[in-house]
Amino acid sequence: MLLKLSVLLTSASFVAADPTVVDFDKGALRFSCSDASATPSTPLHVADIDTTYSEVTVLLDPIGDIGLNASSPEDSKGRMCVLSRWTKALEDKAAGQGYYYPLGRSVDGIPGELNGNDGDWNRPAGHSAWQLGYSCGVANNTGTNFAAGEYMCEVTLPKTSKQNLKNPMLTDELNTPYYVTYYERALSVRNELARFLHLTTFGPTSSELDALEETYASIKDGTASARPGGKGPGKDADDTATAAETTATDNTTDTSSTNTTAAATSLSHSEAMSKLQIDW
Image (cartoon, rainbow, N blue to C red):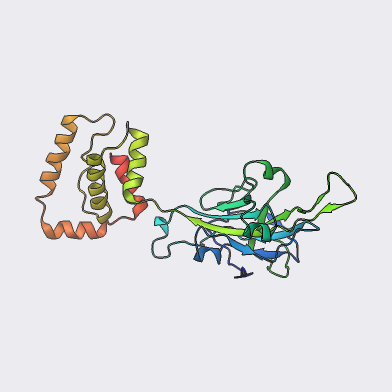
């Protein structure tokens, strides 16, 4: 499946208030992770890139809203797009030789190294970083695959064929395949709570996680009337007892009033998790 050279609309989620204006390569091919997002964690071959004999400049769309949960955007987690190449020719890859060599990534919530815009493409850590540079911004010109005013990133991929070490008159030809891969990872509520307890205590227990899961559910539904009953830093038995008494008192409130309040204070996942952690 070939990657669509689709023109994506600029997303406010990754464009700063005053983005950099860039004159992009007018004839450069443009790619995104939109097609790759259909099969997360599966590299999608970009057959149009060929750096055998010369360097190639390509345009890349930041992660933007690709893979975003449209029904609940704040609940989506860990979205990333990675550009990589195989270290050997395609036929060698089929034979199990070589490995994926990372060339860059666009991560939701991670700013770019130059402009600081959310989701901008960044160089990878390690040896490959020195030979690459990503320029991200709003197009100041119009090209074959983009229009002026669109936001994207540009990178020039180096030639892959090298001079033969034994005979400088010869060239070791290397046509390596390129790939884009979309990754996503969503933590379960229990795992997220376990991470929180790992950071704030000596580690979670099953009973603490059970209690916090129940508290989280009540906060998210808008039915919680007291802070979690677990013992966080600085809490003692009196605190827990007071919380229990408050809960018991609140439970005597008129049912219809409680339901009205619950409907009015229903929270998103991120809001409920933040409130639980603050109140804990």
